[in-house]
Amino acid sequence: MTRASQSGKSRDQSTVWISGEDINLKPKPIRHSSVQISNVNDEENMVLIDTMISNPAANANSTTKEVRNLARILAQVDPSTFGLLKCRGVIRVPKENTILPLFDFKFIFDIPAQLSSPQSLRAVLLSGASYPLDERLELAKKLASSVLFVHTVQFVHKNIRPETIIVFRNEDSDIGAPYLAGFEKFRIEDGNTYLAGDNIWDHNLCKNPFSEKENTY
Image 1 (spheres, rainbow, N blue to C red):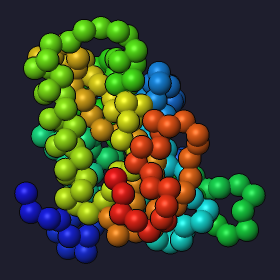
Image 2: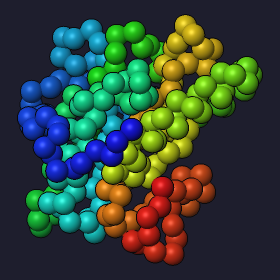
Image 3: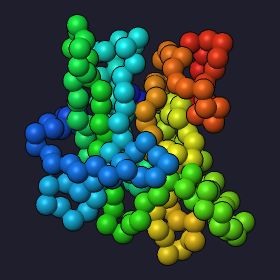
């Protein structure tokens, strides 16, 4: 796999921004996950809503550019190959009570028609069900492919955990088909890391406590 450039020359340059007034979302929670699902307008297929809360310490213009570039890349991805959903676009949500114009971002991902019954990997683990070793290894391989793609296009996910892995019903596997979501803390590979989060240890596995500029996963 060749390394993708973020110059924009090799990807679609059409706008990724969606007006919140042009899309009617009815978000529903996915248990043990920060992402949501929703119908869109009168469409039968569902979408996944992945919300990124902007860090006030980051440069707003740089954040917007990085969101746009990531959305353009994910708009071209093949879900069945890389275990990543295709991005329909991004809704900019103005932050309230700020002096400068700041935005949070809602990534809207299309869920292919053949995928159903989404649940988080955390919910799967908590169910206590036992799965064959070959299916567990296949799930790990698919997730590794998802992470490899994100790194190949020069981004770092920074939020890989069972809550950000969405598993859909799959006739070929009792576990299901895993898709990596949760782009809440992503950054470009040489960007700054900001110390933010909570005290839940498994939410912070990807965080370097010593340096804000260290390249961490």
